Image (tube, rainbow, N blue to C red; front, side, top):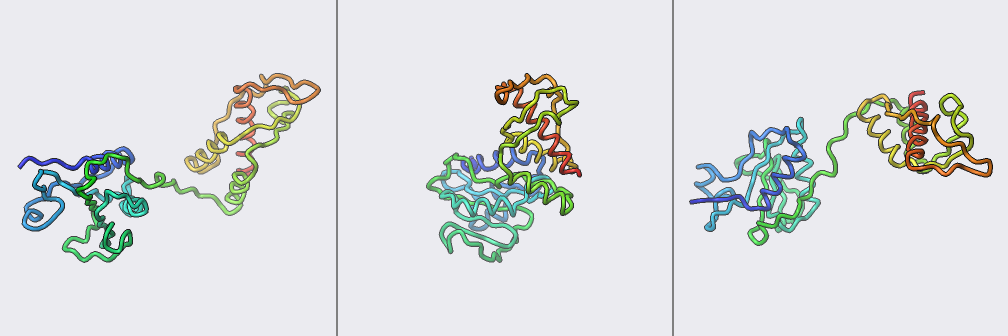
Length: 241
């Protein structure tokens, strides 16, 4: 019999392959083997040739931690889900809906997660719920650094910059209110990645226009970016102090 995997599960497999392109597929599966065919299993093709289940390999070292993926599915309460099995536990949309229960089947499903979907919307290709983010790299910050970082990101999104203290003092005079949301996000990513509060800064401060005596200069988008970069540099210095 010709068979095909239902489209909703093709979509799930596509999404996880995008998020974890280097993951192992050693325990991936769709259509069942002879052992499955000998009994009742969603891995066996139905009368219309559709297979309503897949297995996805547990490979946390390469971005495919099935604890996270299974929990994202459970929390989503997606109407396509019939049941999910992983690591000796099962939840379903019908029996004790969406609550984990012990699983004592012949396979403990420790090496892969099993997903079965309902016939009624098996070909629904809406995006599936995935873990909220890729695993965050570990950052080795001491207590004081962590406190400083916390203070920075709980501060106002606008920071005052006294440009007299910028670079060699040849830049504009005055105090500018600069929105820093994007730069702070960039700083956070650099801290996590480099583990030393490293940021990339532009060296354009000296080229900023001189502020008029009556008030702050009207900055262009490029000027704001340069000033924000200088502020990010100051923040880095504070975090390293």
